[in-house]
Length: 306
Ligand SMILES: [Fe+2]
Ligand SMILES: [Fe+2]
Image (tube, rainbow, N blue to C red; front, top):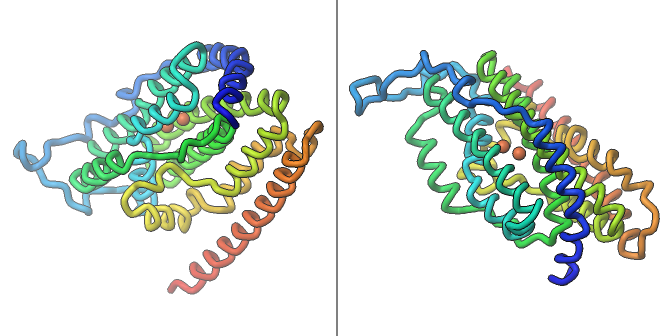
């Protein structure tokens, strides 16, 4: 897509963005992150005369701790996501207003997960800070995705984040953590709805190009947390625990959006649009098969454990 075509499409989608910004602002509840943190559990660390951190202080199951750290470090990389969105959507009009509002909402997520982990001694604060520094210095580079690819990607990514926070909360065995993560997941859900509606409008305006974007993003999906140090190990632990795995990715993230957009019923496609739809069907089938294999292997490994 040329720069001229992108500018034209941004303009064509502006009314949808404005409507959905209004809908979002009416639906989003103001909430206060400090009300979700059990401050009375907090105490000083060694430098201020308290206890140093040690692994035995955490009461979180190991998989929940891995998931919380991964979710937090992913949220921490917000400056990079903001820069990516400004690059793609611009800083003017309804698009610019959305980018800033979204950034302000996302900023709460890292701050209250970090507060929760620090006051409950749920993670090693030194290693967490080292990982945060490494993550932000790595940054997140989406590879200058074209506009529609970016819209499809963030639809899937916001839903993935919602599901990951929600399932992490259930795994924490702590009602305070569950309440906090359910609250964050509600934000992620509203973000997903915003982008989902933008993609829906794009399917009306440019069906073939939008289908191409959806097909490419399903086939090449990567979580933004992939730049976090030890991502593969952390993601494997989270998948083994059933917090976020390929089956959940296919069933609870990719398919609900694909169904919502009715991509297999869309008309008016050109040759590349039809090709994209065939590629999407193949990518969905391959993802489903990989999810089956993963679930089988996980069950075999669990059965083999003493
Ligand atoms: Fe978030
Ligand atoms: Fe979000």
